[in-house]
Length: 116
Length: 115
Image (cartoon, rainbow over all chains, first blue to last red; front, side):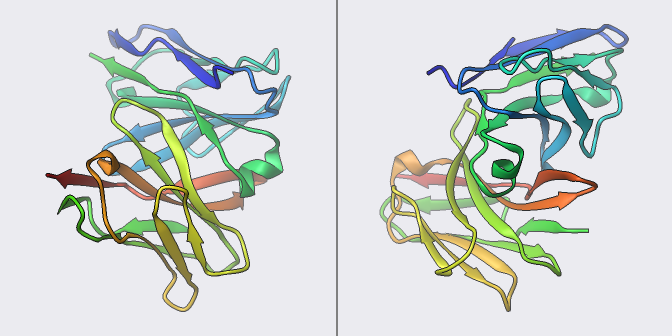
């Protein structure tokens, strides 16, 4: 198993550009989520999905969109990039929604995004 | 609102010395507690977790953490560290809020093990 994969590893955008961060998992996990990691702030939940076709907002959703058309993929879209979105983005998955509450979340290696 | 405080942003230590990484949380309800580790240029990995039962939990690589309800703490300890333990460590609380599950992370503690 490759686990959770993310592409690209690094990205530089100009203010106002849009892009999609890719996330895929091959563990047949129902629950997937996106976090952003900022210095001194830990990780904060952006969006999550409890299965194909079902997504919802986390605590910092503004400026991001998600969709979940398959169990494997959970892309994160930046609609109009802003410098405040400079961060490291992690995708994570877990077997079920309830498992995400009590069990392990598996993280991808991250995407380092810089918005100029 | 629940929060997690990691009291030290950086902890330098010599190899084979003991170490304690401190974590306090605020919560008025039952919580599930986790420690995740992030090695350089990698994603986070679960180190250990407390759900219920024995308040002392152990990982496979010699770390242990003790849940202390009265002090709302979940400190991580290792009696003898190795160079390979150099990483950033995150304490996290699992909770349900607004109908969804989320992990509330501390800001992280960077452990630097020196030879």
